[in-house]
Image 1 (tube, rainbow, N blue to C red):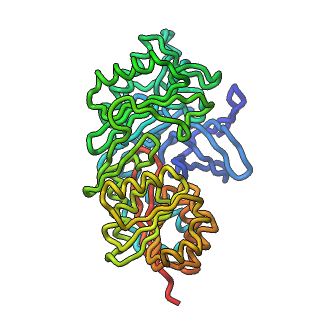
Image 2: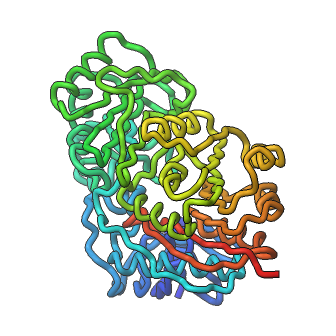
Image 3: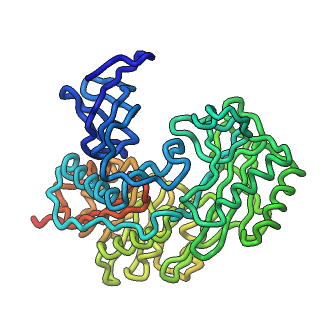
Length: 471
């Protein structure tokens, strides 16, 4: 049954939600039309408001529930449904894992047209809360009010420090407690917010691009080291040291206290100077005794415990004996390269971000790893005949590209180089599947292993082992 909402949005009544699909949304059908719905679970029966209509599909949001799915669980966070994070809290973790593995399988079969071999069960995360080692919080002088707050009629302090409302660059939800990062992350964030409110510091306005306090980054390492980075719009020789001194005294466990002045129209600061106010300008993560230096601009996997499992599996898939020449494409800060260096002859790491390559070199040096070489530049340009002539044809290629996958020129070069094995690590099974189809003329998919790095979300990592076709 359908009817018109008073605001002219079309309402579909008593719609059965069928299954989870891409991007964490669910699928329903009405009159042979596919409907994608967020915020529901397979088995729910709901009324839907159509928010977007195309020729082949519609998008909708739930407005009333007639029956709740047996797969549902009670969300544990008070901000669920408003905050843009942890969108799968309403379904149990076993169900999350089932649909993540299904997502990988569907992508490889439908997009990559892969005849699946051994498909290892998805590796779940031991921690499903407080698993992240990094969070970024944004200041706003016009914080988002929930419907409940508006209905209460109470006056609320609109100076907020928290997360963006989905789809809104200028709206920030003030976060009271976040279940993503372990202590003392919540305490630090609240202390910064309360201090700023009490001392009348201006919270940033993203629309007018005015205000003082912009962003707060907290990193908590598995070594116990702790980094706090404050981003401000303009320099203030009184307010900055006063706030940082307060944090230093209140949280003596902070080992790296830094700030950056960012007058730009966005919050990126990779081109700006970061000032170390207290402690070291970096912290360390550790795996198997290898220490990885993490600076304010460094990339490091945000679930360190599960990253260790991911890298162990990557090394296992590579089947290293100590004799291999390994090329590590999209090496980042050289985490995988340095992690596998002890099990092979040499590792050549390539990455397009120069600062990441400097991190990779430092990580080799501080761990006395002498069989790595790193290059910075565009992958399709660096992976050249000259590089191959200098170092030789790789026995194994490990590739961990960004969500967009590998450039076609890189894939073409891999087909020319024709290493014995390719271990493809991906945070986007859809683009991974696309690339696997392009590699299919010369490679078989020998093994597949999904890994859950981000519980309570739809995101999933996947490792694929490719072996040379026998001709």
